[in-house]
Length: 247
Image (cartoon, rainbow, N blue to C red):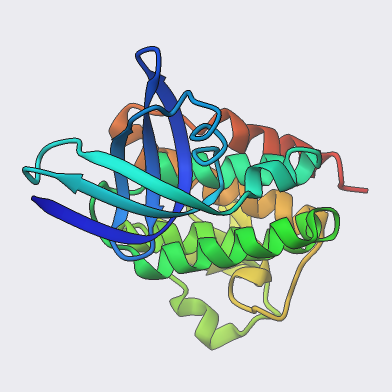
């Protein structure tokens, strides 16, 4: 019998039959896993397996290639904390859907998972304030996810010109160039806000919008399209919500 126990984030859950369900979780130690949850539809189980919740989960199966079974105890009810805050809830939905579709199943991604735990903890503690303040960290997390999957941005030129220069990204290669290097190709490139290379720079609504367009395009082209998926609706909605913040 194969078993493990680990702190996990619920990324998605759906009913399977009348009473059971299948949950997708991100384990701090084991990466993305799916498993059958017996009695998920019950009053006791359903609050546990809501999107974004922190769960102390255990997975078990007789063989490695089987779906396996999941059991869990609720640690933090992020879904309930954020459901009354539209922007924060959209961020939660976007993060979870991007992680579920983007990550490779059963591949440990400790740094990606650890960052996601930190993001959702901050978001659930102060949903109204953190829903704006957390956006730079969200963009850096998406860039880190791209790098984890082998499609990271090439920041080489940034070491030469520093964080004060204006940078653009090629949608084909992910290579970062300066505004002067972009030349006549500038309209075809994505503007890269400096918050991607300067953690002290939180940017503004225009920066967040430009950043979401850039990472969204790269995720869809290099990651989701390989799985015949498009950018999740929650991620598209987040772009629209941030667009309305631009003054």
